[in-house]
Image (tube, one colour):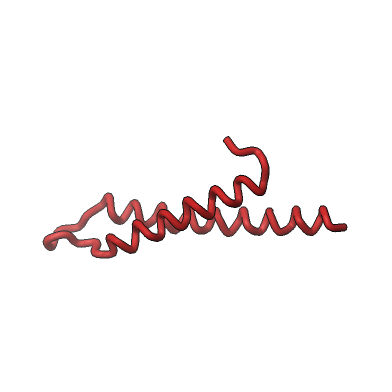
Length: 69
């Protein structure tokens, strides 16, 4: 596990970008007319990952501001 905020920030950005790229390759949620649950779950995980990356970005920016004071 990455303990520094900077490492968590970069790792979360990389994971979020990976989820976004992979999810947009599979935007068709109905395969041959039937509902595909794994694709929908992967899409939801992508949204959560991007939200987490945003939260870590906020923490990283706040820690940078505190160091500069």
